[in-house]
Image 1 (tube, one colour):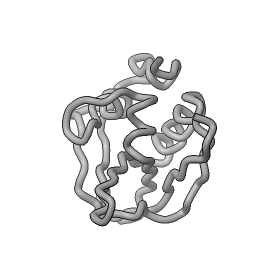
Image 2 (cartoon, rainbow, N blue to C red):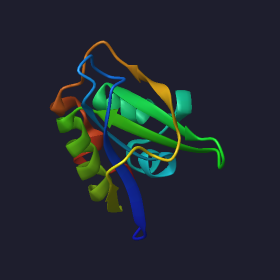
Image 3 (cartoon, one colour):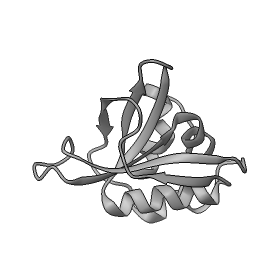
Image 4 (cartoon, one colour):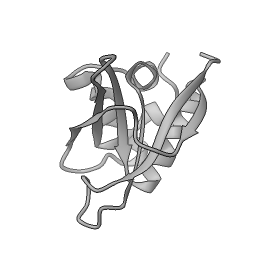
Length: 122
């Protein structure tokens, strides 16, 4: 996985009333290779690690992007992708697709409960 992967870092108004929440999203295949898949849009692994996931879809190609929100989560997300072997190109705009929504758990898991962030999925 040494080819460069675009990861999108941007602000979005769909996550908080202030409208300036940092969001980071990456191609679904890359996210699943690091966090695992399953569930809606193959986002269960990401949701288990961060307490939620955001979904985007590029209509023309059918490509999906999964992401997280919050400054710390975005940083931890990028770090985990790098530890998984990805070489990232940070693109400071939304992914080329429509925001579909997000799913979240009632509470965010603690750092101790997120082994996917410590060790890449093999």
